[in-house]
Length: 417
Image (cartoon, rainbow, N blue to C red; front, top):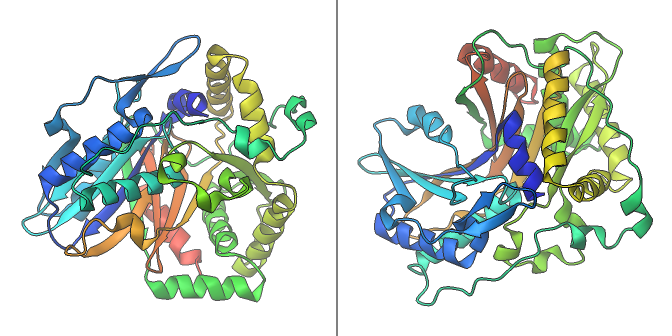
């Protein structure tokens, strides 16, 4: 999993970000000490990815204490946040974790940036919770013992028949030509982010709309996202097109609640394709389509086929992994096709952001990876009943005006908008 996510740098920036806005100022030195503790206790975070025939994580001798937390003074954190989110983690040099503080005269916005080669979004939540614990404990008087963790999918796949591991899975169908976000000229090397945080009343409306059709919040989000994509892209009606949906494979573990936070800091998520048919459906009809498509997958161990494929293909060697990613990129570029991605990370628990009882948290959300144009990835998190939608994108191929308009369209399709 780590090797695949490292190789995916070919198709976009695989950095992820946990953003926490505080009413007050964090102790900068305490935060540096806590960060140093986390890097020591979770060895992969204090390592660099060594790219070779048999890649491995090489532990670094150490990162300068002052470099562990970078301060960005700002008069307007909301304005300056996208520029900080565009600062990537380089997995080849490490470490796999970087802490940014956007600081005003009285408030801090904390941005915890990690690389997907080291962890998935659920791992980022666990990493943030561990960092908060270390901050509250002033970095722990005794650093927790570092352990060598199993970062494979072995535990996830163990309940499934061995025969499933050796199946010759068919090659994925190429996405329909033209099924991609519209782009202009100029490339996508500059990263930018579009953000929307909706009031709690919006989540209530989404839940009500879903309940009327026995659909989940994710089904409603998927339906609105698909309608906005169809309005923006204009695919021909009738032929189903794919949206990639992420899933956390920890659901298949015997007792996922027993996992320690350090156990969680790894890659245990994959994506699978949901096919939906463009047309003139209403939101209610599209919610039903999304519900049915998701239920079909949910009845057949969603994500396991992708996990088996990744795990099996990984044994062919890192060179083959890189070739596979490059072939995917070439196919997408040739066909101007890149299935949009939806990652609903879910609820951010209060304990994840509990750095100090004396410094209230105003808001929190996760901003995910950036796929090169014409690809886009919508990330959704919920904190205190507020939905936050984020899309990272490459400009100038995708202009800020175009993406902001798309986000407005997406929100307009959500119930209660």
